[in-house]
Amino acid sequence: MTISSDTCEWTDVASAWDERRRHIESMKAKLSDDLIAELEIRPGERVLELGAGTGEFALRLCQQVRPGGSVLATDVAPGMVELLRRTLEGTPNVVVEQIDAGRIDLPDASVDVVVFRMGLMLVT
Image 1 (cartoon, rainbow, N blue to C red):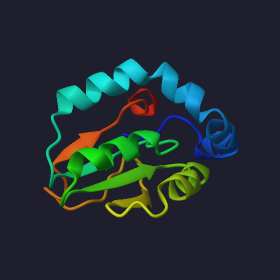
Image 2 (cartoon, rainbow, N blue to C red; image 1 turned 180 degrees about the horizontal axis):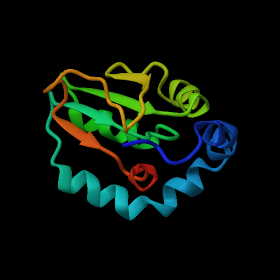
Image 3 (cartoon, rainbow, N blue to C red; image 1 turned 90 degrees about the horizontal axis):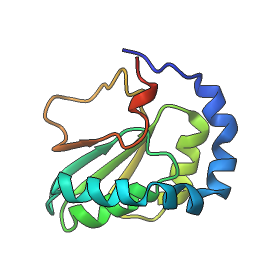
Image 4 (cartoon, one colour; image 1 turned 90 degrees about the vertical axis):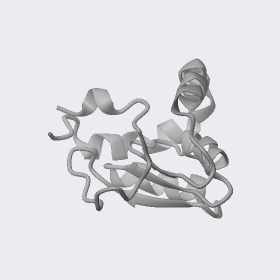
């Protein structure tokens, strides 16, 4: 399994996604609300978000896992990872890493929930 889009392209558009984050999130509002409801994330759980983009959804996930839980917000593109770091800076229960969704190198059972809101269409 590999990411089908060039990570450099996503790095190139990171600043545009940042500038348009409110619009982007408003287009996905119902999806995001439904996803939160269906996941039934509980306090204390460990969540992995793949393709976390601007980090806005990771902020919502952080609220769901408190107290005691954590969110690992990831993206494959270096520019998007930097955007995640800026967005999530100072959020106590979140870690940002560069991870390719097609090659997740985490120990088995290291997370309770995996979320891939919009990026799955890019994995082949």
